[in-house]
Image (cartoon, helix red, strand yellow):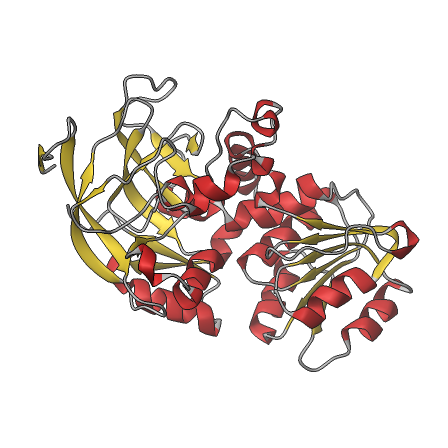
Amino acid sequence: MATRRAAGDNEQALTIRAAVLRRRGGPLSIETLEMEGPRDDEVLVRLVASGICHTDISYVNEWYDASEGPLILGHEGAGIVERIGKKVKGFRRGDPVVLSYQSCGACAACRSGRPAECRNLYDLNFGFRRPGGGNAYLRSGVKGHFFGQSSFATRTLATVRNLVKVKRVLPLELLAPLGCGLQTGAGAVMNSLAVKKGASIAVFGTGSVGLAAIMAARIVGAAPIIGVDILPKRLRLARELGATHTIDSGREDVATRIEAITGRGVDYSVEGTGNGEMLRLSMEMLNQKGTAALLTGASGPGRLPGGRKALSVIQGDAVPQLFIPRLISLYRKGLFPFDRLVKFYDFRQINRAIADSMRGSAIKPVLRISAVQP
């Protein structure tokens, strides 16, 4: 591992390769950069793989403030611990880890076991700086620390708050997407909505997040499970993964079809499309006292007529260190076959992977990073 002393700094500088966003819309360029080593409360991780999430793609396409400088994205990393800071407990060199979102650990929400409600969530995940302040990327003007990780790179810095130690029973490249999208979809059903056996649910959008929600709905025994999308290929897969019914929203009237399937509406809905019409329907088609989980940053009116509710859900209200091992266990039992969503790409193919995801030919792109050096 190439290192040298960083000028004006007490830590060693590490040579890394990273996919850098320099202008809105991309493309991302693979560049050689220098990064500081871990502080006392940080962990250095050698990335093996990283999923590409809708949030990464949205940032590429909708980046509105280029004045903040070039960025390193990526927030579904998986890799091997290489070094740990002096104050880090519970990890050691060689540990396989999955990376998830960052939280402070000190606010009331974190202390009560609700890190997805962390008071500092936005700053820690979208502030492009270390939890303690500053930027670890030297002399280049590039900023990282996206979701506390910036996993579109060969190495990254994280903390114990966004690291999940995993067992060496499955390939790390397969586990990478559990850190955000799949956790969000499954967690929305299992945690946020706490869907009960026999309850009806409609999932609007059958990308990776929606399909994770459908698989989770099957696990908890929901019925009927309705998948809504405009892509027939994804609707067919939704059927195979647990949907009892599917609706092509480009060809069918969604409200009429839901009423025909259930006789009224649904007890729960999960909205992951960000489309205004689907957002409206996800709330309007609820039964009395039903609840909608809104996953794309949209905020509903909260209380709706008839005792219905709309929740803005972040990360499926999951505690990653507990929920990700649960999803791995369900996968090993054959109950959460998320491998069927994954399509692998070489790290150098990152722009192709993003394009494939945008046009719907890849549901969950995962970058193989370990072959790229340094």
